[in-house]
Length: 334
Image 1 (cartoon, one colour):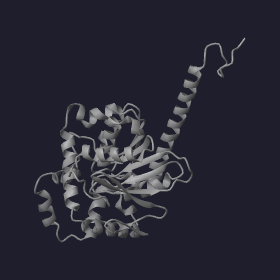
Image 2 (image 1 turned 30 degrees about the vertical axis):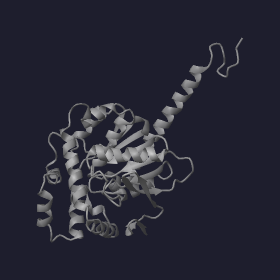
Image 3 (image 1 turned 60 degrees about the vertical axis):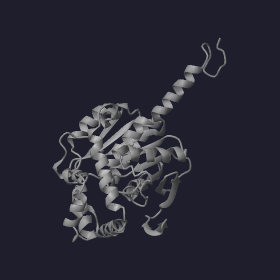
Image 4 (image 1 turned 120 degrees about the vertical axis):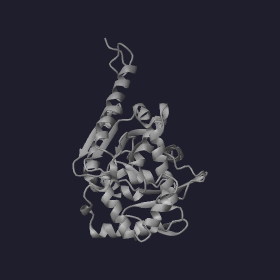
């Protein structure tokens, strides 16, 4: 299915999905949604990683359609969102865009989900605006590593001025199919899980985005933002902010992830104050695309647990406000 968003470029929309454009002062975001299976379901927001888009969440949103009212946003400069007017591609800049979107939507606290760079972005959102986040799910979040994976070094090198121009010259003979294949080799635990039809659609999408005049600039400056976030200390450190997150947190890591080391799973699980860990043996960096059923199942368990917890707390509060010497309904005993 093809839809269009300004300025009229064709955009792929999965069956059952809808696209809309959220316009805020100085910021325009493309938003992909899947109508909920029933009215009144809690809102959820999905945030992609470096080089990704809202399309990365289609399978997971479908798996959660009976549990949440889900939306996936294209971060500024990615997918079908134009660059931000202020040119800020830092983790803080992307987090600010997400916060502005959530404030404008005014749907209450959301189940917030992030992958890779989006995991760093959503960690920052949850730390600085706990009122916006009901639960947090992080799939291979890009939290600082002292010894990054060797396969992640080329991505980090994009942050160095001039390297992008050199890389584009070195790979000028690569077509969209070759580039798509290289990305999948890096991000999937087993690229063979991608069928021919899905691969063809991914190639088509890659070519469409390569044609955008700001594609490499958004990618390069966002990569620089990730690297810069690794150097921040004090209260701005992502690990320090992870300690401040109040929302119940689900951490998802792939044992075959070439970009985020599985070593970080235990550190993250020990840092987030209310966390649970899902480790997938055969997954790579994008578990929500490789094993959406497993991620959806873990998220449903988290949401069910939080619902039960909130129900118990609500009953406890109602009991606490009952006057002494009553039966809980306000009627005196005796």
